[in-house]
Image 1 (cartoon, helix red, strand yellow):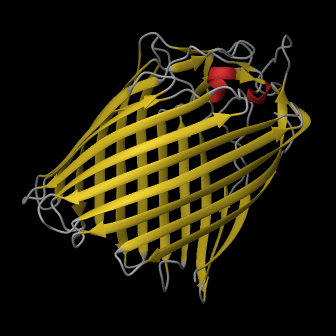
Image 2 (image 1 turned 135 degrees about the vertical axis):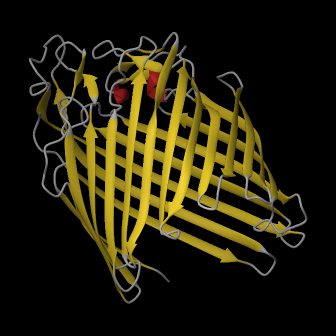
Image 3 (image 1 turned 60 degrees about the vertical axis):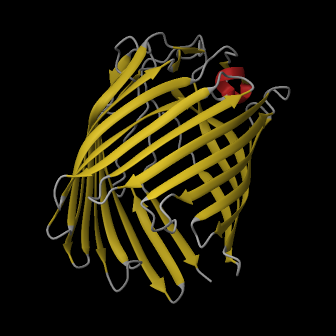
Length: 420
């Protein structure tokens, strides 16, 4: 499974918020990051691996990745905070290159967003029972994989939220996005929260979504690890529904939530294994359904427990088990706080079971080993400096979500944060 590889990443993030005397707010956000990394290779075709252990091979390949993101947002309230206007501009640039292909991949995304909010019952926005919103978005992105190909999209959306006197709340939204490459995507969202008693709520959520193909899925090339592109590929579409019960107990110190969900995908983007990695849209519907249980409880004044369990069955249009979508996932976190919330010791456990992936020898679906990893996090404060430290994969458990590729072993991190 290759030799040990690593990465070095440096990130700078600067945020500023300023409130003016004219009920206006200005937000600035700048972030840059530079990363150097090395990675392994896989056996070259027509050579074939005898198992997942010799599919990934040692190499001296290295790469770099640079990221830059900038955004500015201006928001102003009118009519004694009965309405507000918000305008935002953002741009993100990614540059990546590897020694193997010797090329630099550039991707630039630029967006402009306008958001209008209005209280519909003559109350302030943060106190209203009925809130209406209108959003306009213009997005533009380009990639040097194909300099002549650019993507532009314009979106118009609206949302209405209302809360009744019995605390029942509803949310309804609609969005229409047109682009120069794909047909107009129309999506909607509908949600309901209905109190059944002082401690129990019924929750319903539904909606649709559209996911556009990536540049690699459209154009392929050496910068996409040699994969073929498919200019005729279409966006994925999905519709999802969920119902659940939320209940508080122990005098509001604890909360449980049980959710049953179902999702149906059409035109799911799939691709054959190497070396015939050619993206196509599946014919038929891919289905996912399952259950999620969430528990949060304050055991003592400064002792909290949170756990989450998800059971999901994912099958493609041919009713085969989907790759890399575990049937069972369990997470638990216990935190002990001290003088403040920023001073704590936390232990977390994650278990993944019944995960399937295409095996490198014949690319048939094969069950991967189940695994459990443990983490330890510590936070404390020195004056105005907050310090966070932790160890992930505390016991250095050998685990993987993809055949041939091991997940990171034990790692230690240390972070310091100062507020002005």
